[in-house]
Amino acid sequence: MTEAKSGETRPIVIKKYANRRLYNTATSAYVTLEDLAQMVRSGQDFTVHDAKSGEDLTRQILTQIIFEEESRGEALLPVQFLRRLIGFYGGQMQSVLPSYLEMSLDSFAKQQEQLRGQFKQAFGGAPGAGLLDEAVRRNMQMFEQAMRLWPGFAAGMPPAAAPPPASADSAADDGLADMRRQMDEMRAQLDRLAGDASRK
Image (tube, rainbow, N blue to C red; front, side, top):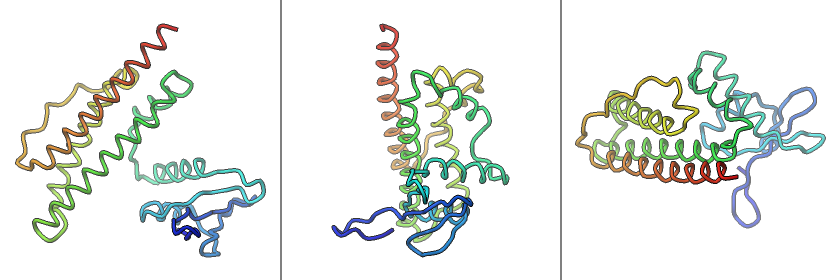
């Protein structure tokens, strides 16, 4: 990040040249897609621009990073999810889906941070792998249940699994309840949009 005159941080500017090389203007060095992926993981914000035209290529480069990660065996996105995601392009819900997915991922990330914070406070260290895995499983189950609210995603999905057993961790339960509330609000918004579209 670079410091703006007002004291605010600005995204690092990456320039893409015609030979496909990427140049980090903050470090004055050429970088690879893997370098950019590591910057994302470490929380560094950046934008990518065509060195000649100035066109913003950030979305294209981030998509390319995801493709590279998926192709090297670091598969994160299920095939059926990708198929349904492609199906939304050009549809009525295309404008709503990005904010919905962003909200879902934000909730997921916040829950993981809360869980880590709770374990650090209670035990002075990182949570055990088994407990963190259980939290991830519960979050993924919540995400799948949320996807079933969408007619396009619900088709072909496996039957919903039984809800996870009650946990003594009330803070984690509060996080799940908050996520359910947000999902309900988004579903209500989608219902209103679908109703408006059907009346046109």
